[in-house]
Amino acid sequence: MYAAVVRSFDKAPQYDLFDTPQPSGKNEILVDVLAAGLHTRVRSQANGSHYTSSDQLPLIPGIDGVGRLPDGKCVYFVAPDTSLGTFAEKSVIDLRRSVPLPEGVDPVLIAAAMNPAMSAWVALQRRVDFQPGQKVLVLGATGNSGQMAVQIAKLLGASHVIGAGRDQQRLHALAALGADDLVSLAGDPEEVAERLGEAASEVDIVIDYLWGKPAELAMLPILTKRSDRSRALTWIQIGSVAGPTAAVPSVALRSANFQVIGSGQGSVSTAGYVAEFPDLIAAISAGKLTVNAESFPLSDVEKVWNAPTNHGKRVVFIP
Image 1 (cartoon, rainbow, N blue to C red):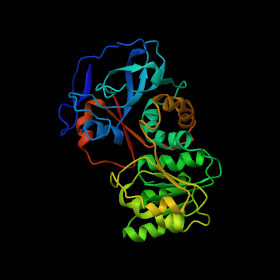
Image 2: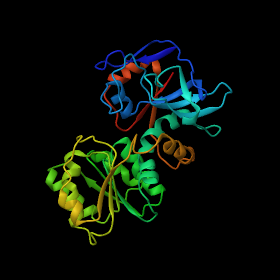
Image 3: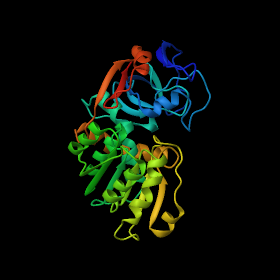
Image 4: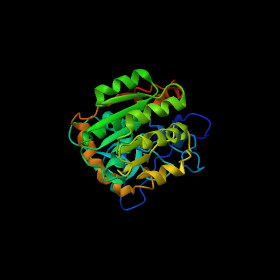
């Protein structure tokens, strides 16, 4: 079969012939891959920097996709934890990590949306006791996952959603996606933190795709301006675009009802993720989430991989 193959962590995948994988477990089956998304997580998988990555090469990148079963039915699936991912003509899937798709749904749409949408969806459904009417700050809302998080928070019943990001054009576009307030993260970091404190002091949940200094500096301004510090504020750490570490002030944990948790592989079980797939797929299929997808043939993988990133689009490869 043809696949995108990584033979060196410092080079883009190359389109090449590769041995077709074979099912080995009782729940495994070989599917024809219809579409697979180039997510941020896939790039870190391919360059060996993700925290789940091993040094095993060669590898086929891709962590999820839409596939066609031998009986002709289509499924969304998450790839098994092996070096043989979804950027290939065929992929071995574990049926326990897959769910059937509705008739007529666009495979490209599902492949583009599921990964960036899943982070916020699972965080709100599995990591906290999110209640309709609560208020949410999305830190890093101008990225693909952040844009989804704004929409998902509203879809699940948030009464007020604040989107915070650096890209001014994409920040203003968040209003059409459901953001009630917008905060620019451009400028002096201390001033940015103060702006966040003024705008987000009454939120119940922070969905954080940035971490690093922006999170570190914003915690105390947000907490000290709360009208009632005993009202719970949960900070959900999902991404680390701005840095892998942030110093949490000890006074923040003592002087307010404040907790910092994470959401991702390990903090939520695979079964927990799979249980959320059907409802999220239904929302995407029904057009309740805006998805910006751009598809390319898998044979163009090296060219697309090295091209400047279009942050407004989610790239999907079609084998």
